[in-house]
Image (cartoon, rainbow over all chains, first blue to last red; front, side, top):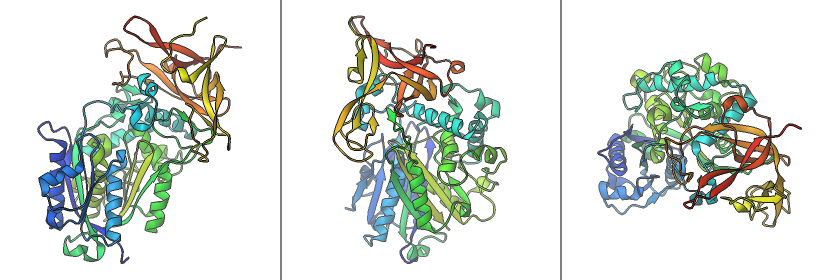
Length: 382
Length: 143
């Protein structure tokens, strides 16, 4: 398509804990790597979209990269910050605003669970003070209900985590690189049952960046440009089961993920069966299980069999989170969605080394979900 | 009698000594909200009325909070004194599911569908020793 947009540069500062580096420094390292990959200078970039949740304004990156006067838009969209930055960069290029756009994210979170403040989310103080405003609780409550309605057992929760750490062990950039036994995960500390310690990802640090340009000129800059077939962000509808909800409506509505996924497939003109490699938001094992069906990759309840039969492994029919996902990489909120895109680009470029999906994958998919009910989906093609 | 000091007085009304949850209901489409809101996210109307959600429900989903939450949680506990507590969504008679603490934190005693009733539990102590209560659901007394 004449109006297609391509990714010509990817850059990652590995996620994890980096005491000596600020979040912004990690973002700058990722951004310089992406520019180098694209073979262009920062002064060629016509617009940048970037975000961090806990590590300051992304626009401060200009103080590192250079004060070129470009429009730099700070993005603050929770876990969908990276997806939103990328969707905005794609739209900017499609509109003819610029040839080269950047999407960048970085973060550096304190250790332990996130502690959001109710007023920032339009909620009353008592909701936090009385111990109800925890993301881990939401994931557990949604997972418990889903297991009840669709016949998913704890075995699936263990298998998701086991595969994440297995893939992480193959990824030199992953934070958690140790494989874990079934028993080690199944018997780990109960955090919010049915979810246990090793079924949750941890807040972390890191940076990720993309350089994009019109597809028609992309080969001048990179021998293997990746075409963005869709980049969609959607927010919740009334009645969907969302994080930070003091109550849920009597009549349930589908999650924003369902809407984002459908719109992305429609834009790309492909379906779930066409996807060769995918990233699904795995803040916890239960979320990944739910997201498999919400994104259209299986029927509700079918996950148990797919996970047991190895279909979601690197050499399976539906390889999920080949770099270890959030579980093995941790979650720096601002950068997390862009890490997913970078992993799919790496797979489609056939540069994933020990974790490379066999069979020359052509189409990839990424999905993020975050508070207070926002989802971002991309479909990428080599 | 005097009622207990609540962390969230606007959420509770008493019928005698029995606490009821208070929310709101949309005048236009009838959708029910908890806590009370000033507009309807379903139909976008802005005429809302106070609505009594009652005190009976059934367990719709549950978890057990296994670690001490950071601030703004203000129970005053430390990691050493922290006691895990139950959290659930409770489906009320009108269909709305209310997120609440549960008096039970034992996984063998929690089952989706079990009947529950509203109660008030002390969850922190003030500097001068007074207890502050919040709402919670407990297994319903057998009839």
